[in-house]
Amino acid sequence: MIDKRLVIVSGKGGVGKSALSAGLALLAQRRGLRVLAMEMGDGQGLSTHLTSGPLEFEPREVRPGLHAMRMVRSDALLEYLSLQLGVRGIARFGPVARAFDALATTAPGIREIITIGKAIWEVKEDRWDIVVADAPPTGQIGSFLRAPVTIGELVPTGRILAQAEMMKETLRDPSQTRLVLVTLPEELPTTETSETLNWINNENLVSKPTIIANRILSELEEADAPTGPVRDAASLHRDLWREQQEWLHTLPPDLELPYLFGLFTPGEVAAHLSDELEEIL
Image (cartoon, rainbow, N blue to C red; front, side, top):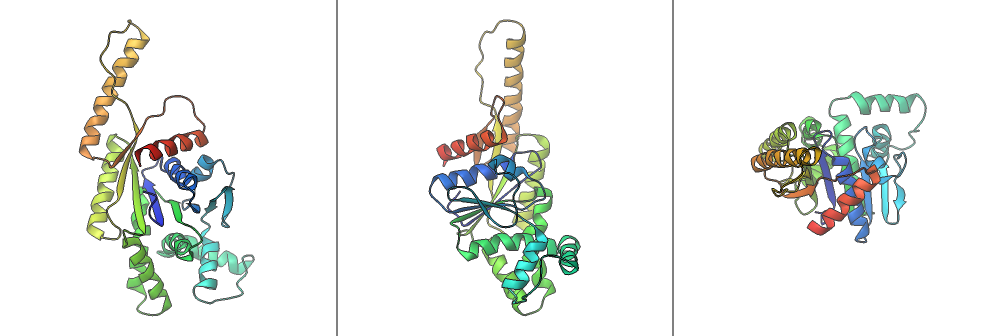
């Protein structure tokens, strides 16, 4: 899974996609890779699970070999205009910067192409062996994956079209990009993941995603137990396990990660998931 240059992690809110993104970044770092972990959305889940403190647009080393950053769309737009299109001398402060911030946040298609384009640009810069992107949830990921196609349909020729074509090919290239969809063995996450898979298959924007089912209960053997809370807990565990198996059968995942019993900090959750991924992979 960490054999690609760009790993995009998405999933319905609450399924653990930020924790898994952090776990993948930690695993890659532990294997000696140069890693950039990117927070693409507006939340702070990635930084919380990396225990890095608030992240900025400029990548910062949070562990040896592991850098992390947060997407700031106005900064990304200014960077794109400066480096990709040769528009120099635009300040990051003042009325012009505020205008670009409004453009990057509200203009249809601009927000998405800037966000996904930044992740792809970091791959092409070759500063990193792998870029792990904690992407927007599955309800929004489609517009980001389709952004290069959308821009290509709007721009007939020129450098912007060439950039959009490069982004489109990078996303479609299975040797460079992997999309990971995180889900839970429950009705709503399974349904949303299935709908996302169908959309991806129809649009042909990225190669077949990797499905990871999170928080899987282990099977509990039938055994005599004293009456009271212990027996009730064991009975509930078995009922939940059977329900999970039904949803896992509906959407067979590529990988399963266990339910973590106990009280853990976000950093500990990411570390446990990283260890589990290392054993599986």
